Length: 552
Image 1 (cartoon, one colour):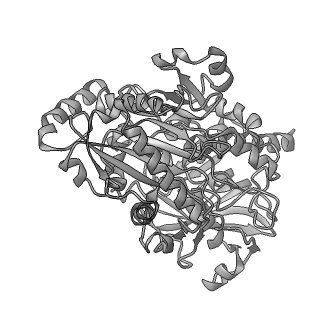
Image 2 (cartoon, rainbow, N blue to C red):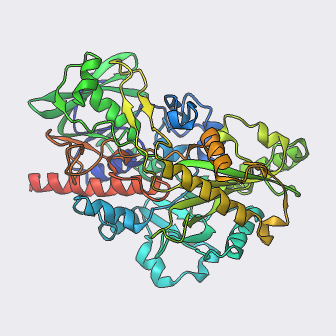
Image 3 (tube, rainbow, N blue to C red):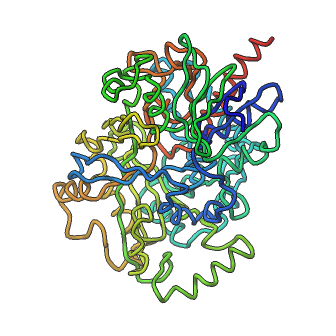
């Protein structure tokens, strides 16, 4: 391996956005790209490709960064687990595969903040470009014009309804309709509100991560070099320009030079971390760790936003939920055989098969709560599987879509191998907690409608004994967890705390961009992987436009 090789572009991080960049920037054959990934390949672990296998990946130190927060002051000083994908595909290789774009107004708000070119109308072509949408049989009720207007075909990312759907997932939808919510067959179409089936990125019973969608077909290109188990250490700067990246590989410190650009795609934790390790960021943080300051940007590592969630868990009278109870062991022998032979059955499910977007109160202009229905008891990131052995139960996950609380990502030390210090500052704003309390009441209402209520035995969590707002607030602060959607730590904008401009170029430096969810000025109303993919597509188009003109 050449310890000081040169490429047109050096991309740091093969996550959801980085995979898109690696594919699109090498597509025309004009440019060479080095893609650095700290984790291993995604090809050999069967849990990555099995949608339900995400539970097993939560424990992995090989495929998961396994970060932990600082003690959260407003959540009873609890330390919360923060899983992030550490393999080709990043978190798209270990998450629940849910394909949700967010609300159109989320992106229009970015445009209102001065992010030119980032309104929903302007971004929709990039969502569609990435997508190969497979309408499900139940999508017959969706207007064909809407399908054509809002969805793409022929893109790298296969999006479809899960092949398997637990009967309880459909019962949740019916219960939501009985509770007065509109049935919505396409949360990524003309409107987001209502209850209905989720779309997921999968095909033929297997996860369709961004690595599988964008990288696998590009790996044989002579102008693309992919290094796994390569840990970025520092961005090299010369006269205000990013000239390359230092990284650890096979026990050595190597350097890759970038003729055109260095692009960070490490995500909301690792991108600001690498900037600060390179002396780019708030000078008080950089100097505190004796790192030579190179470029002051006070917004690096600030503005961290994430979805906070809680679970309503209901024990059932039947054995429909997924369970590891001894009475289900024969069932799982059958399901494993079914999956191994045909890629069908419960193991082909992404577990979050249905959900909804609802308002916490009638005064809200748009839906501000998201519900995930899963036909199993809450197992807290897969770290505690005991509930699966104890009982048959389903869960309704509730999270506040647009929290007001904001946190930070900071350096732990000047050592690139030390993980960043993550403080999401969950629950600082009382309104965030209040919305989760309202969400629990909404979930209870849905769960007691006839379609689900006839199956209920008892409410396990929060528990029927907790009824007042004060009791539920205390329970929220004792139990709330992350929904795995951190964003905003290298935010796009024009104000003094912005890190990148509307073309994702780092303010004040040449040849350096950030392309991942850290650039979001505000958190979107939904799961973030579809948006990360869109960000990669739009960034690739802008980068190619810039350099094709340059070569023109």
